[in-house]
Length: 363
Image (cartoon, rainbow, N blue to C red):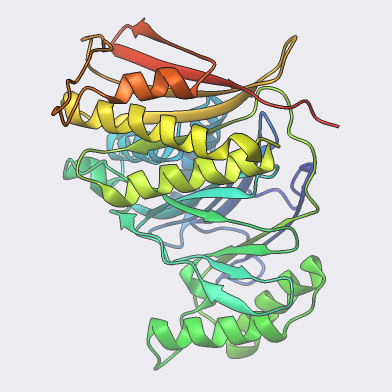
């Protein structure tokens, strides 16, 4: 039911493998997917539906389709996961699924990871060393919707050229008589000592399961970032920042910093980061919900970098004098001095405060 080959994605090398616990039958609940997205991005999915029967395979097929659809519609990684959970909850099934969705911008190396009850991914360095990527997670798909806990935190990491993100299901690390930590340690050592060639490495990982007689399905997706290439028009990065969520705010700053550097706007990095931080903090302080921060490059007569901060409040911000002793009210005055243009757009369920910076053209 899974494709043997994944479409080529500019800027990346991808290897995928599936091993069924029922030898000779490609039936089970584990799956992988790679979803080409606009602007030099790719969505990488690994997941595991409860069970090893045809019903698990049927649920897996539907989940794979809806995850692909939600990602292609342009939703943020956290929203993709939340909507998939609602979809599974509304199916006529008692199955749940664990899943990791990683959206990688191959021009900047920024990867946004969302985890739903799944094992943490690994990153293999260009020199072969390997490390776990701790990603704060939410409940498995289906369960998060059942219990009304649809907030999925986003972990942001940078993938340098030559580094490989390793996504896999727990059948790869489950060992008879051993706990998950021991299995992760053995897997990390195997990746560290494994072949440099991505396809050979994927083969080696599956061979190791056969050698020990693993009794669970296994899916593997390896994503290696190739040499940096120029960003494509229309590319964007997005981060949801919830109230009282300092980790998400830190991830948004991390995302902006990496994008500014990769898109050739290093000389304006401090201005972009400070303005974006002011707009985001303003949204968190003066509205009831969180904010969605988006950064992208606009093409036209001159190259511009744009930051959008959306929230669910219809109240429009206004620039005002804070006074000599005021501790607030200075944010928009500061933004006005830092940026080349800024404004506010009303949206159906709130507003978007945006700012733009003229940046040098690409050589």
